[in-house]
Length: 308
Image (cartoon, rainbow, N blue to C red; front, side, top):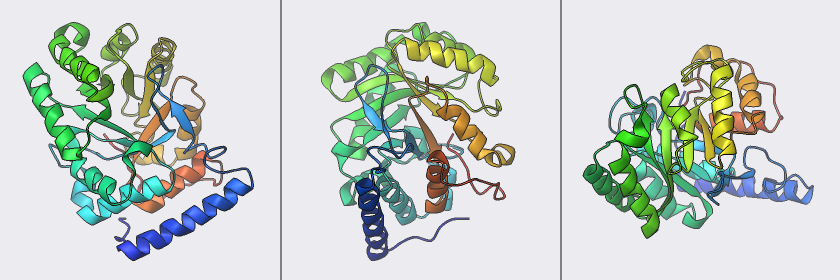
């Protein structure tokens, strides 16, 4: 189910109510800055970059450039309003990628409602050739209309890229140059291969790692008992660790055990923050409630989905 789009008056009416509720909670000592787990500020390793524990994913089940569940199932206004709503709930981590086609929607949300200096923008480059990465990064900055993208990752390291610290070095050098220039603050990798994930811990270039993690091994690089020790090693090396596929990319059996999966990941000291994709405000509200221990969740027929 997709939530209907809010017009501007309705959106800011909802936001005003949330702000009022947040003020009341803060007065009681349980405001987002001091209590809410989903919106608690987290630091990514030694990068000095902080963001909310829960991030808003913008590329559910990518099928090609600009083709995701969100771009297919939401109008542009609905997508932008959902980003704005996430920020109003205390989300400051927005997870994007060139392949998702989500930069335009984020740019509009930044123009309309979200203060740039209050959020962490993460995006990813898809291609591996150095010149293409350089050109794509410049275009991505223009699409977002920002001087700096906080974190940029090499997207989806997969089979055949196990030796990425050697084979992708020219592209990595482009991102390092961008970091020196202040065009990005940190770089790293998004992994879809266990051997590639293992290499991240020992690679000095890597500041941040986005890794697939849930207790069931669904849509992961291996079973949890193999992946968790690698994440610990990466974290202990001072790198930021971000979790994805927390709900197994929306697999109904995992969604039905959302509370168990969230509690598992939240119990890992090695995971600094996590990203989940949402199609509606209701889905976001539900995950926040579970993370904060305010509701016991039952499966709802698979409405919840997760980014790729």
